[in-house]
Image (cartoon, rainbow, N blue to C red; front, side):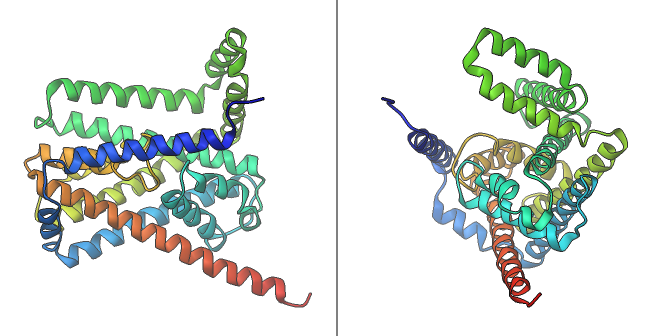
Length: 331
């Protein structure tokens, strides 16, 4: 007789995620009036909101191109028309479902669009995530180092630089030198047999990424990733201008990197709370004021969440209609 089940574990994880979101939301809004935040949002200039939406569209368009290149390297004979539904649909599901279920749906449920086996799609997804972490941590380190950010505490700056360097090193080892990871996993499995399932899953992930780890190919993917994330940084800058908060690129890039990396903390679907707290703290550190900084976090999150989620479900609906029409045609 077992005392727990996968369902109960998932329920516990969901509950913990919701609790974490609630704690971060409380920390974000405990010293500000929601009414004053709403008033600040009404002052947003529409032309800069449109600019932010354009930057978001550019960023996600480049990410789709990046994934298309990966899938084609695995033998897929497809175009953006086939890539858009699983990519945007996966992001949309991640925004509304717990446990990053959109990633699972993209790998398993959208094979009809890509024609790539789940193992290949898993490798492309893993490489995509690794590149995102790599680029964001590089942006974070570069912003802190080259712009001489003095508004943050020196100990915090040193800690952020150390975390960024450690993340970059870990990603590079995972991509270019999987052998140390294999040795560590085997050692851990030998000492703690219960770790074997997780260890084997990690090794399968390493093998999947290795199929895409060619230097020139990785350089191409890396450069596209850099431009894509800088494009999203443009959205952060545009929202700063929309609210009349700042015009400095370094603030936008710092908010982008810190806020996005904060979404790695387990939380509710849509990364509510963790994202808001991190972004608001960054903007407030540069003199934005707590109310204005909180309004900024709410607005950039809303633009990202609403634009990508609505686009994802719309593209999936249109693709589903087209697919059914093709199936209905006489052969």
